[in-house]
Length: 104
Length: 215
Image 1 (cartoon, chains in turn orange, cyan):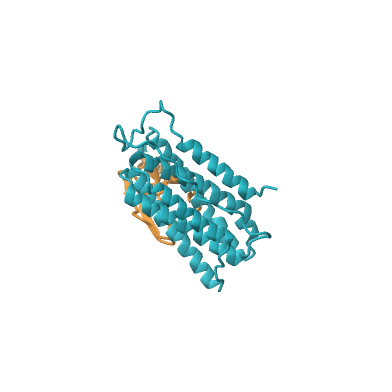
Image 2 (tube, chains in turn cyan, yellow):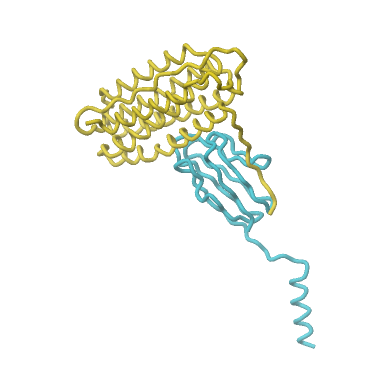
Protein backbone atom coordinates (compact mmCIF):
# COMPACT_ATOMS: atom_id res chain seq x y z
CA UNK A 1 0.00 0.00 0.00
CA UNK A 2 2.83 2.38 0.97
CA UNK A 3 4.58 1.73 -2.35
CA UNK A 4 1.39 2.52 -4.24
CA UNK A 5 0.98 5.80 -2.30
CA UNK A 6 4.53 6.84 -3.12
CA UNK A 7 4.09 5.91 -6.76
CA UNK A 8 0.87 7.94 -6.98
CA UNK A 9 2.55 10.93 -5.36
CA UNK A 10 5.46 10.81 -7.83
CA UNK A 11 3.10 10.51 -10.79
CA UNK A 12 1.03 13.49 -9.62
CA UNK A 13 4.09 15.68 -9.16
CA UNK A 14 5.52 14.97 -12.63
CA UNK A 15 2.36 14.69 -14.69
CA UNK A 16 1.18 17.96 -16.36
CA UNK A 17 3.64 20.20 -14.49
CA UNK A 18 6.94 21.65 -15.75
CA UNK A 19 10.05 21.97 -13.63
CA UNK A 20 10.09 25.42 -12.08
CA UNK A 21 12.65 27.78 -13.73
CA UNK A 22 14.04 30.46 -11.52
CA UNK A 23 14.49 33.54 -13.75
CA UNK A 24 18.09 34.57 -14.16
CA UNK A 25 19.68 37.84 -15.20
CA UNK A 26 22.35 37.84 -17.88
CA UNK A 27 24.74 40.60 -18.84
CA UNK A 28 25.74 41.45 -22.40
CA UNK A 29 28.54 43.93 -22.83
CA UNK A 30 28.67 46.12 -25.92
CA UNK A 31 32.34 46.84 -26.45
CA UNK A 32 34.65 47.18 -29.43
CA UNK A 33 31.65 47.23 -31.78
CA UNK A 34 30.61 43.74 -30.64
CA UNK A 35 28.02 42.22 -28.33
CA UNK A 36 29.65 39.88 -25.81
CA UNK A 37 28.62 37.15 -25.64
CA UNK A 38 27.50 37.03 -29.26
CA UNK A 39 25.25 34.05 -28.57
CA UNK A 40 23.43 33.73 -25.27
CA UNK A 41 21.11 30.86 -24.30
CA UNK A 42 18.15 32.14 -22.29
CA UNK A 43 14.88 30.78 -20.96
CA UNK A 44 11.43 32.36 -20.82
CA UNK A 45 11.39 34.67 -17.82
CA UNK A 46 15.12 35.43 -17.92
CA UNK A 47 16.27 39.03 -18.04
CA UNK A 48 19.04 40.24 -20.32
CA UNK A 49 20.82 43.49 -19.55
CA UNK A 50 22.91 45.19 -22.21
CA UNK A 51 25.50 47.77 -21.19
CA UNK A 52 27.14 50.03 -23.76
CA UNK A 53 30.84 50.20 -22.93
CA UNK A 54 31.81 51.85 -26.22
CA UNK A 55 32.28 55.59 -26.73
CA UNK A 56 29.74 55.65 -29.56
CA UNK A 57 25.98 55.02 -29.29
CA UNK A 58 24.47 51.67 -30.25
CA UNK A 59 21.08 50.00 -30.35
CA UNK A 60 19.85 46.53 -29.41
CA UNK A 61 17.22 45.73 -32.01
CA UNK A 62 15.42 42.53 -32.95
CA UNK A 63 12.98 43.51 -35.65
CA UNK A 64 9.43 42.92 -34.50
CA UNK A 65 10.47 41.97 -30.97
CA UNK A 66 12.46 44.61 -29.17
CA UNK A 67 14.33 47.86 -29.76
CA UNK A 68 16.35 49.66 -27.13
CA UNK A 69 16.58 52.89 -29.09
CA UNK A 70 19.89 54.73 -28.98
CA UNK A 71 22.04 53.68 -26.02
CA UNK A 72 24.62 56.29 -25.05
CA UNK A 73 27.99 55.24 -23.61
CA UNK A 74 27.49 53.51 -20.23
CA UNK A 75 23.74 53.36 -20.70
CA UNK A 76 21.93 50.08 -19.97
CA UNK A 77 18.81 48.48 -21.36
CA UNK A 78 17.09 45.24 -20.45
CA UNK A 79 14.61 42.84 -21.93
CA UNK A 80 12.68 39.98 -20.34
CA UNK A 81 12.38 36.89 -22.48
CA UNK A 82 8.74 36.11 -23.21
CA UNK A 83 9.00 33.50 -25.96
CA UNK A 84 11.22 30.44 -26.51
CA UNK A 85 12.49 31.66 -29.89
CA UNK A 86 15.81 32.66 -31.41
CA UNK A 87 16.16 36.42 -31.35
CA UNK A 88 18.54 37.67 -34.03
CA UNK A 89 19.38 41.19 -32.98
CA UNK A 90 21.66 43.93 -34.25
CA UNK A 91 22.74 47.51 -33.90
CA UNK A 92 20.76 49.63 -36.35
CA UNK A 93 23.61 52.16 -36.42
CA UNK A 94 26.39 49.72 -37.25
CA UNK A 95 25.51 46.98 -39.75
CA UNK A 96 28.43 44.77 -38.75
CA UNK A 97 27.11 44.29 -35.21
CA UNK A 98 24.91 41.21 -34.87
CA UNK A 99 24.19 38.70 -32.10
CA UNK A 100 21.64 36.13 -30.94
CA UNK A 101 19.60 35.07 -27.94
CA UNK A 102 18.78 31.37 -28.21
CA UNK A 103 16.28 29.32 -26.21
CA UNK A 104 17.71 27.01 -23.56
CA UNK B 1 63.04 55.35 -47.99
CA UNK B 2 59.30 55.44 -48.23
CA UNK B 3 57.67 55.60 -44.87
CA UNK B 4 54.88 53.15 -44.12
CA UNK B 5 52.52 56.10 -43.95
CA UNK B 6 53.48 57.19 -47.47
CA UNK B 7 52.79 53.65 -48.70
CA UNK B 8 49.38 53.70 -47.04
CA UNK B 9 48.63 57.06 -48.66
CA UNK B 10 49.66 55.76 -52.07
CA UNK B 11 47.48 52.68 -51.63
CA UNK B 12 44.55 54.86 -50.57
CA UNK B 13 45.07 57.07 -53.62
CA UNK B 14 45.16 54.07 -55.93
CA UNK B 15 42.04 52.56 -54.38
CA UNK B 16 40.15 55.83 -54.64
CA UNK B 17 41.20 56.43 -58.22
CA UNK B 18 40.17 52.93 -59.31
CA UNK B 19 36.87 53.20 -57.47
CA UNK B 20 35.98 56.52 -59.09
CA UNK B 21 37.03 55.70 -62.64
CA UNK B 22 34.02 55.42 -64.93
CA UNK B 23 34.27 53.31 -68.05
CA UNK B 24 32.24 54.47 -71.05
CA UNK B 25 30.22 51.18 -71.16
CA UNK B 26 29.48 51.14 -67.42
CA UNK B 27 25.77 51.52 -66.65
CA UNK B 28 24.77 54.37 -64.35
CA UNK B 29 24.35 53.61 -60.64
CA UNK B 30 20.93 52.24 -59.81
CA UNK B 31 20.35 54.25 -56.66
CA UNK B 32 19.29 57.87 -56.93
CA UNK B 33 20.69 58.49 -60.37
CA UNK B 34 18.72 59.90 -63.28
CA UNK B 35 19.65 59.06 -66.86
CA UNK B 36 21.91 61.60 -68.45
CA UNK B 37 23.31 62.85 -65.17
CA UNK B 38 26.75 64.37 -64.97
CA UNK B 39 29.66 61.97 -65.44
CA UNK B 40 31.23 60.60 -62.27
CA UNK B 41 33.98 62.78 -60.99
CA UNK B 42 36.79 61.89 -58.66
CA UNK B 43 37.58 63.35 -55.30
CA UNK B 44 41.09 63.79 -54.03
CA UNK B 45 41.78 61.43 -51.16
CA UNK B 46 42.22 63.04 -47.79
CA UNK B 47 45.94 63.39 -47.27
CA UNK B 48 47.45 61.54 -44.33
CA UNK B 49 50.94 63.03 -44.39
CA UNK B 50 53.93 61.40 -42.75
CA UNK B 51 54.59 62.41 -39.16
CA UNK B 52 57.59 64.54 -38.28
CA UNK B 53 60.93 62.82 -37.92
CA UNK B 54 61.10 60.74 -34.77
CA UNK B 55 58.11 59.23 -32.96
CA UNK B 56 55.06 61.31 -32.20
CA UNK B 57 54.53 62.79 -28.76
CA UNK B 58 51.30 62.24 -26.84
CA UNK B 59 50.17 65.86 -27.38
CA UNK B 60 50.82 65.50 -31.10
CA UNK B 61 48.91 62.21 -31.19
CA UNK B 62 45.97 63.87 -29.46
CA UNK B 63 45.91 66.65 -32.06
CA UNK B 64 46.07 64.13 -34.91
CA UNK B 65 43.15 62.16 -33.46
CA UNK B 66 41.01 65.28 -33.07
CA UNK B 67 41.89 66.46 -36.59
CA UNK B 68 41.18 63.04 -38.10
CA UNK B 69 37.75 62.89 -36.48
CA UNK B 70 36.92 66.47 -37.46
CA UNK B 71 37.78 65.80 -41.10
CA UNK B 72 35.20 63.03 -41.21
CA UNK B 73 32.61 65.07 -39.35
CA UNK B 74 33.02 67.88 -41.89
CA UNK B 75 32.78 65.45 -44.82
CA UNK B 76 29.64 63.94 -43.31
CA UNK B 77 28.03 67.34 -42.96
CA UNK B 78 28.74 68.08 -46.60
CA UNK B 79 27.19 64.76 -47.60
CA UNK B 80 24.10 65.45 -45.51
CA UNK B 81 23.66 68.72 -47.37
CA UNK B 82 24.46 67.48 -50.86
CA UNK B 83 23.32 63.86 -51.14
CA UNK B 84 19.76 62.88 -52.01
CA UNK B 85 20.42 59.19 -51.36
CA UNK B 86 18.91 58.03 -48.07
CA UNK B 87 21.52 55.35 -47.43
CA UNK B 88 24.38 57.77 -48.06
CA UNK B 89 22.76 60.34 -45.79
CA UNK B 90 22.23 57.74 -43.07
CA UNK B 91 25.89 56.73 -43.34
CA UNK B 92 26.98 60.37 -43.26
CA UNK B 93 24.92 61.03 -40.12
CA UNK B 94 26.50 58.01 -38.50
CA UNK B 95 29.96 59.37 -39.28
CA UNK B 96 29.03 62.71 -37.74
CA UNK B 97 27.56 61.13 -34.60
CA UNK B 98 30.30 58.59 -34.04
CA UNK B 99 33.30 60.80 -34.79
CA UNK B 100 31.84 63.52 -32.61
CA UNK B 101 31.54 60.98 -29.80
CA UNK B 102 35.11 59.77 -30.32
CA UNK B 103 36.35 63.36 -30.28
CA UNK B 104 34.45 64.07 -27.08
CA UNK B 105 36.02 61.01 -25.49
CA UNK B 106 39.48 62.10 -26.68
CA UNK B 107 39.02 65.65 -25.42
CA UNK B 108 37.70 64.42 -22.06
CA UNK B 109 40.77 62.21 -21.74
CA UNK B 110 43.35 64.87 -22.60
CA UNK B 111 41.62 67.31 -20.25
CA UNK B 112 41.82 64.77 -17.45
CA UNK B 113 45.45 64.04 -18.27
CA UNK B 114 46.19 67.77 -18.45
CA UNK B 115 47.58 67.21 -21.88
CA UNK B 116 47.33 70.00 -24.49
CA UNK B 117 46.97 68.76 -28.08
CA UNK B 118 49.94 69.98 -30.10
CA UNK B 119 49.44 70.72 -33.80
CA UNK B 120 52.00 69.11 -36.07
CA UNK B 121 52.70 68.75 -39.74
CA UNK B 122 50.56 65.62 -39.63
CA UNK B 123 47.50 67.22 -38.00
CA UNK B 124 47.72 70.31 -40.20
CA UNK B 125 48.09 68.15 -43.27
CA UNK B 126 44.98 66.18 -42.29
CA UNK B 127 42.95 69.34 -41.89
CA UNK B 128 44.19 70.84 -45.15
CA UNK B 129 43.65 67.58 -47.00
CA UNK B 130 40.13 67.36 -45.67
CA UNK B 131 39.37 70.86 -46.91
CA UNK B 132 40.77 70.04 -50.36
CA UNK B 133 38.73 66.88 -50.54
CA UNK B 134 35.53 68.68 -49.61
CA UNK B 135 36.21 71.36 -52.22
CA UNK B 136 36.53 68.66 -54.87
CA UNK B 137 33.40 66.83 -53.70
CA UNK B 138 31.47 70.08 -53.68
CA UNK B 139 31.78 70.27 -57.46
CA UNK B 140 29.92 66.98 -57.92
CA UNK B 141 26.20 66.23 -58.02
CA UNK B 142 23.81 63.33 -57.67
CA UNK B 143 25.21 59.84 -58.05
CA UNK B 144 28.65 61.19 -58.88
CA UNK B 145 28.79 62.95 -55.53
CA UNK B 146 27.53 59.88 -53.68
CA UNK B 147 30.03 57.53 -55.26
CA UNK B 148 32.94 59.92 -54.77
CA UNK B 149 32.02 60.67 -51.15
CA UNK B 150 31.71 57.00 -50.24
CA UNK B 151 34.86 56.04 -52.14
CA UNK B 152 36.67 58.77 -50.27
CA UNK B 153 35.31 57.44 -46.98
CA UNK B 154 36.59 53.95 -47.79
CA UNK B 155 40.05 55.24 -48.67
CA UNK B 156 40.15 57.65 -45.74
CA UNK B 157 39.19 55.09 -43.13
CA UNK B 158 41.72 52.62 -44.53
CA UNK B 159 44.43 55.26 -44.34
CA UNK B 160 43.52 56.38 -40.83
CA UNK B 161 43.36 52.79 -39.54
CA UNK B 162 46.80 52.24 -41.01
CA UNK B 163 48.19 55.29 -39.26
CA UNK B 164 46.50 54.34 -36.00
CA UNK B 165 48.04 50.89 -36.03
CA UNK B 166 51.47 51.72 -37.40
CA UNK B 167 52.12 55.12 -35.83
CA UNK B 168 49.72 56.42 -33.20
CA UNK B 169 49.23 53.36 -30.98
CA UNK B 170 52.92 52.34 -30.95
CA UNK B 171 54.03 55.94 -30.30
CA UNK B 172 51.63 56.68 -27.42
CA UNK B 173 53.42 56.63 -24.07
CA UNK B 174 50.55 57.42 -21.69
CA UNK B 175 48.81 54.09 -20.94
CA UNK B 176 45.33 55.63 -20.92
CA UNK B 177 45.91 57.35 -24.25
CA UNK B 178 47.20 54.09 -25.71
CA UNK B 179 44.18 52.18 -24.36
CA UNK B 180 41.81 54.79 -25.80
CA UNK B 181 43.46 54.58 -29.21
CA UNK B 182 43.17 50.79 -29.15
CA UNK B 183 39.54 51.01 -28.04
CA UNK B 184 38.47 53.34 -30.88
CA UNK B 185 40.08 51.29 -33.64
CA UNK B 186 37.08 48.89 -33.83
CA UNK B 187 34.82 51.88 -34.55
CA UNK B 188 37.02 52.85 -37.50
CA UNK B 189 37.03 49.23 -38.69
CA UNK B 190 33.23 49.12 -38.49
CA UNK B 191 32.95 52.42 -40.36
CA UNK B 192 35.18 51.07 -43.11
CA UNK B 193 33.01 47.98 -43.48
CA UNK B 194 29.88 50.11 -43.45
CA UNK B 195 31.33 52.39 -46.14
CA UNK B 196 32.21 49.37 -48.27
CA UNK B 197 28.64 48.07 -47.91
CA UNK B 198 27.21 51.42 -48.99
CA UNK B 199 29.68 51.45 -51.88
CA UNK B 200 28.45 48.00 -52.96
CA UNK B 201 24.84 49.17 -52.67
CA UNK B 202 25.53 52.19 -54.86
CA UNK B 203 27.07 49.83 -57.40
CA UNK B 204 23.82 47.82 -57.46
CA UNK B 205 23.80 45.53 -54.34
CA UNK B 206 21.14 45.17 -51.59
CA UNK B 207 20.67 43.89 -48.03
CA UNK B 208 18.05 42.41 -45.72
CA UNK B 209 17.46 42.68 -41.97
CA UNK B 210 17.55 39.78 -39.51
CA UNK B 211 14.57 38.92 -37.33
CA UNK B 212 13.40 36.24 -34.87
CA UNK B 213 12.43 32.70 -35.65
CA UNK B 214 11.19 29.75 -33.58
CA UNK B 215 13.45 26.72 -33.07
